[in-house]
Image (cartoon, rainbow, N blue to C red; front, side, top):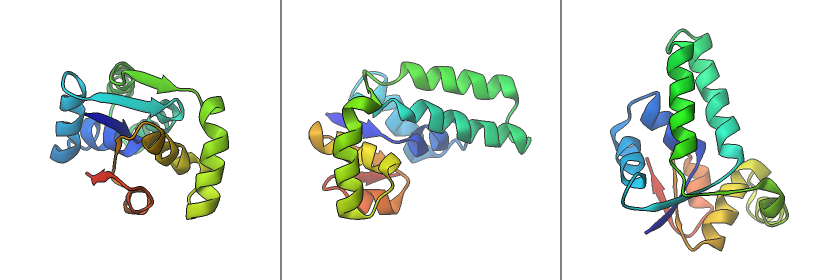
Length: 130
């Protein structure tokens, strides 16, 4: 099985301990091939910084979670490769170009998109909500 994870999957699994997201991350370690656009690491880092600023997570814990996130995907696709198709998808489906990176990658790889974003899930053919 091939899957694309957006940032919400990692944040929900690693910072919120959300069971459905945690199961997907666990499966990514040995059972499924996960690809991500490179922007996922900045998005996860930004969300984790918010948890630290809100005193919901210590800085060291945020760093450990981000380092773990970097190790999960089997493939990381650069934004230069995704940007043109993401722009087209964004314009066609009313998504941000950021979100369209995930949608375009899921379609290019014929993979399921795993996300907590209902709007993003609705914009692709195959999605799993966490």
